[in-house]
Image 1 (tube, rainbow, N blue to C red):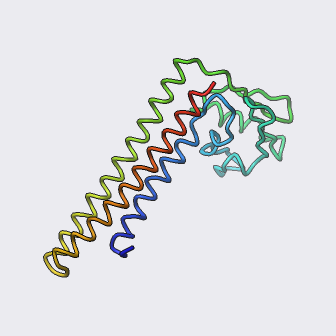
Image 2 (cartoon, rainbow, N blue to C red; image 1 turned 90 degrees about the vertical axis):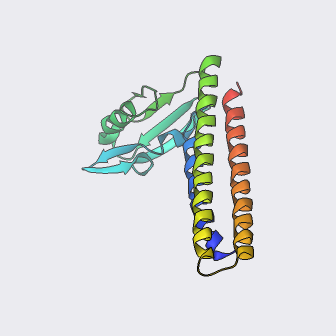
Length: 183
């Protein structure tokens, strides 16, 4: 791959990775510890990821269990969960916190699929914007450094990279939508 195309490939990869991490955080009826990935707990004045202050397990398909390494953190972890968009009220027994995920209704599943598809479309727009920036950069090179044929080759190579990422986004969105709709 040409290094001029590689820099745009890297930007597209970042857009895809961001969308993928967003999809991982969407809950689909089953308990998925990734819904807690963005949560931070106030740990001695420092916002710390929840995974670094306790052990997170999934003992049953619809339950996430958080066992903090320090019992004093239970209230802080509960506060972080309540203040987030997880949408689950935590319960604790003094030593562990449990998040029980209710079954999703058919209507809610369809709403989540719409959200998944919107995230996919946003990622595609980001990919296409990178492609546009790349094509503009190549056209600027035409005035000074390289021939029309080379520009055409660079644009074709960038288009192939764009097509690959669009296909990857479509398959990731399709897989997540299937996971959400599966009862």
